[in-house]
Amino acid sequence: MRLTIVGCSGSFAGPQSPASSYLLRAEHDGREVNLLLDLGSGALGALQRHIDPADLDAVMVSHLHPDHCVDLLGLYVTRKYQPSGPLTDPLPVYGPKDTAERMEQAYHGLEEGGMDNEFVFQGLVDRQAVTVGPFTVTPFRVNHPVETYGFRVEADGSVLAYSGDTDTCDALTPLFSGADLVLADSAFVDGRDTTRGIHLSGSRAAQAALDAGGVRRLMLTHLPAWNDPAVCRAQASEVWPGEVELARPDATYSI
Image 1 (spheres, rainbow, N blue to C red):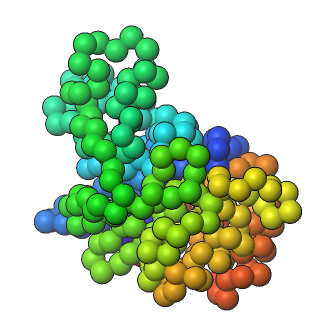
Image 2: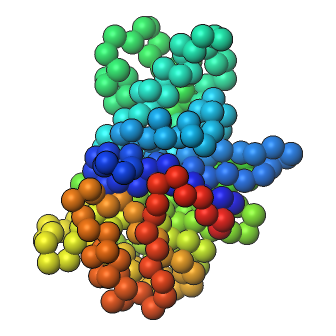
C-alpha cells in the first residue's frame, strides 16, 4: 500500500499545499486500485499530478467541512463534462448521511437527477467496514462538532490510520492500535488553542497514538498555514518516543 499526500493544509488551502486529501494505491487483480480519503479545497488540481481523476475507484469523505469535501464539485465536472463524453460508471463516494444533499446544494443549477449519474453516494456507519478492491476501510466516529469519521485502512497486511478532524476521544484507541502509520490531525497548538472538542494538538495526537499501542510511525497533518510545523512536531516529540514525521504535499510513502 502506498500513500500520497495530495493535500495536508488544515482548515483552508495554504500557500504550499491544498487542504486535506490522501491517495492510497495498491495492486489488486492485476491492476492498481486508487482510493481517495477526502478531497478538500484545492486538492483536485494537485491530484492530477499523480493520477487521472477518472481512474479513482472510490472516495471516502471524513466529514462535510469544505476543507475535506468541496473539490467533489470539481470532480463531478470532470466526470460529466469531459470532451470525450461523460463517464458511464458512477463513482462510489462514502460519507456522512447528508453528503449527497450537501454537494447538490453547493453546485447551483444542477439538472434533474442531481449527481446520480456521476456519483453513488453511500452513508458511513460507525465501525462498519467497507471494501474497495484490496482495501478494507473501517470508519470510526470521532470527536468533532459535526458528524466526522477517522478511517482505518487495511491492505496487504498493512494498516494506515487516518484520524480525520478530531480531539481526544475513546475511538482513537481502536482506530490507531497496531497501525503501521498514523496520520493525525495536529491543527491546534498547546498554549495557543484552548477550545476542546475540535482538533488534536501535536502532543495530544502523540498521546493518542502511544495509548493505542503498537503504532510504528506517527505523521502529523492538517496543519493550517498559520501553524509553525516545527512547533507542532516539537510538542509531539515531548510525548512520542520515536521520530515524529510531518506530512509533505506530493510525497509518497510505502506502508
